[in-house]
Structures are given as structure tokens and as C-alpha cells.
Image (cartoon, rainbow, N blue to C red; front, side, top):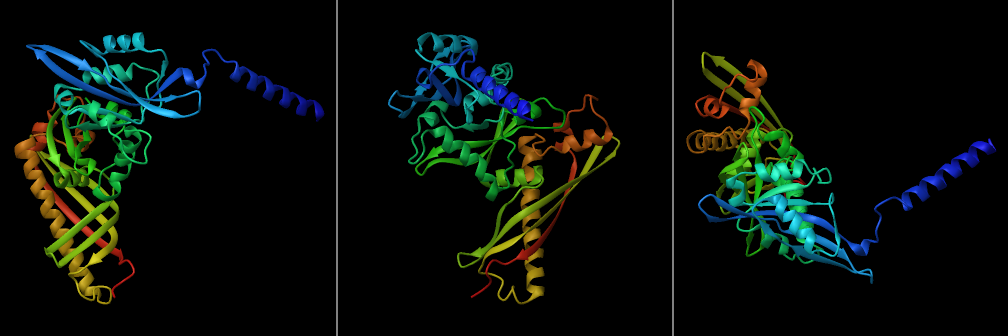
Length: 370
């Protein structure tokens, strides 16, 4: 028994020594830890693109203090930028801790292919970093100082992560999610769109992509309905309002999405069944709803009709204006009727019959009326 105990202790000590003396170890003061990466482009002429790649880093001083530094270089390709950056630095860049990847709208509309190539081939890159498209230059967002936060990357990643609690946004906005969606049959990439407003950095919409290129920008209202139609198991708040004094808020805690697909010749039809269960958080419309089950049913019916109406308005916009299957109905059709048949699902969905059925169920009414 004692021999086993001593053997465990010796193995533990040797493992600790091996780790502490591992190759490549340097003091933390000699490295710059990347917390955020940006991608910008500037058109210099006909067919000439200059790339810019700002990075936000954490640098530790010998005194123990931490500072946030931004580095930026330009070049005709991303490889040239990376090489130039390290030539000017007196510290080694440490990757794998990136919180966000910010892409300027110009870059997103030009195409994410170069960015995705650079990231996917980089074995040290963090695949779980959140992605967002920004208005203007990504550099300006990484420079942004938010009180109470060490750097902008920390704030923006938290903003994206928690936004879905109220707006039916999913949590699938990470780099690895983009890998899966770009180029996959019947799937589409949608990313949060952020802007610097008078109140600070805010999510002001959703960037809609066709493969790797951003093609449309949905505002907050349309972005909410887009995600509601596209995602399963999301949550958010929906309101009915007749006047400034007559309104009701429904906090949908759970949602379910089921899609049925039918085909007759080359014509496709889809039925989207949505169901929501949640809490009434504010009620200035339906008097005595907590006491009268009939009034509660009336509200559930009215809310379901309102959601259906908003869904049909968005579907009309998607089919006539976007002409992109941004709610991934093509994925359902391909799964049922077969993949790799050369079908343009954007065209199919843009010409399909789409029906939406909504059910709303109130399970709680907050603390009740007073």
C-alpha cells in the first residue's frame, strides 16, 4: 500500500516539474494575449483590396497591472498582415483566448472566405469566439471603452451571449457555427449586427448571408421574427399594444418549432408550427385575466394571431426582397427528399407556399394583479 502511495506522489511531482519546465514557457510579461480580432477592408482601386486586421490584446506589466493595447497592420492579404505585425512586436502573441471576431459590413459584403480560411487553418484560433458584423470599422469597436470592463471584447461577447434571452436570438453565433453554415446545403448564416449609438454599442439588427457574403440587413424587429422562425428552443418577449396605456407583455420562456415539407412536382410547401409557453410580465389590457380563464384564452388567441401576422409579413419580405432562405427551410426539404441534387433552395423557398401556425400558452402571470 505504501509503495502505491509513494509511486503516486512521485508521478505527481514529476508531472508538475514537466509542466513547469515545458518548452516554450515564458513570463506573462513577455506575451500579448489576444482577446478580440477585427477584419476590415478598403478598396484602393479597380480590383485592388487592402486588408486591415486590428487585434485587441491584454498586456501584463511587471508591477502586476494589466493594460489593453490595440495593434493594426494593413496588407494585400492576411498572411502579409500577420507577418508584418510580429516583425514590429517585442512580445509574442498568444491566441486561443479571443472573445469576439468583428467583421466590418464592407468586409462581410465582400465575402468571409479569406477570413474563414485564415481562421480554420489556424490551429491556435478559438473556434468558440462570438462573431458579429459591425457598421463602420471593426477597429473602432475594439477601441471602445466601456466603464467596468477591461476591454471591448469582453463587453461585446457578453452582449451577444445574453441578447437571446429577450429577442429569440440563438446562441449559434460562434466561429464554429459559421464553419457549419457557410456552404452547407439548405443552411444560411445569420450574425448579429452591431452599431455604436449615443447609448454605446448595441445590437441593431441581423446580418443575412448568402453563403459567405452578406446580402441583407434586417432591423431589430425583423431580426426577432427571423430568429423566431428559424430557431428551436429560443426565448424572448412579445408585446401587444393598442395604446400607450393599453399593452401586455408576454415573456416566452420556451418555444418549439416543427417544420413539415411537402412536394408536388417542382412546387414545395412548408408548414411551420410554433408553440410558446411563458409568463405575462405586464398586463394593462386584459382585465381580471388572472381570475377568468376565458379572458386568458382570449389573450392567448390574440397573441397567436399577432405573431402569425408578423411571421407572414416577414416571410413576404424574405421571398420578395431578400430572396434568401434565411430561415433554413431548405434544410428540412433536403433531409426529406435527398441532398446533393443541385437544387437552389433559395429559389425554391422564395417560390414556396409557407403556412405558419402559432400556439401560445400562459403558465404564469407574474405576481398577479393589484
